[in-house]
Image (cartoon, rainbow, N blue to C red):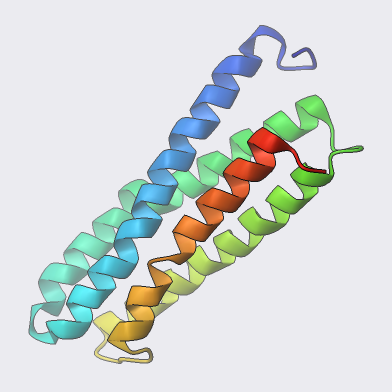
Length: 144
């Protein structure tokens, strides 16, 4: 692939995928942490430390790097005529919103609030699965 990235294109693409994996792993684990926090409010300090480290060290930096590298890849190949890419971007944009919502939810739960049920938290754990399936199909199959 040519473009302004030149020979670095495949390295940027590889780094993008690596950080997608890091981000997705953290998005799978945060709802699980919240399930445990929901059932063990007396351990809020311990869970707060774990959740804080996950957010600061893996989750948010990975999302930012995914966006940065993804934008570089998009600029390199262009958006024109890539319907699959528009759909993928919409999903990633919505998933980024879910990321922010989970952070807000974790803060509320660490403050002692329980705005959602444990069952809802368990269902939220499936959202990253749907996102992975959708994005991989769009990026690999390019159905439109």
